[in-house]
Image (cartoon, rainbow over all chains, first blue to last red):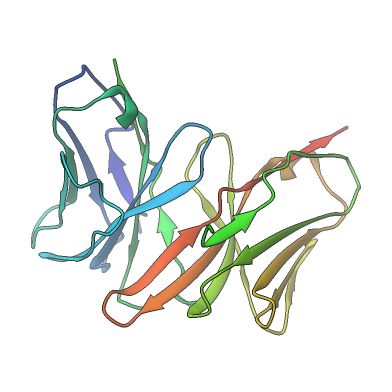
Length: 117
Length: 113
């Protein structure tokens, strides 16, 4: 029973390139959350998606960032025209449904470390 | 004001010591509460949930005070392996969005021999 799978583990991009980060939720989970952790900072919520729907994108930067969770396949976080300030660890988590509680807490993937040179 | 606030530390303690971390949250619509642990920039891992009545798991005790909007974590008999960043996490339920976990910035614990 695999956990949340993220790939790649490490991603290096030059300024101006595109970064695509993938997240496969746990089996049976249809809700995905993306968080970003800048160096020396805590996790910041970015976006919450259900299959084929963006539920809450209040934490997404207004430009260059987008996310999707198609009916088939992993969730993708896409960053266009990356800048040095995008260098961070990006974590994905999944849940089976809309409710997060003591019986159904969030579990995280091992993250993608993006480095922009 | 931040939604979840923690003392960043670091807390430097000797092995065997008892150490306590505090966390405050600002949103009274917060539904559930957790402590996560994060090692060396790895993924956060659930340490324990925090119940209104308080709960204990081995050397770890968590307390919640809804009236004061305050959460605590107590670690007894600290081990070297307890060295990590401890994240206070609050689940806010918004009718239009469902759940959103909000993380504190974390408290660094260093246990020394």
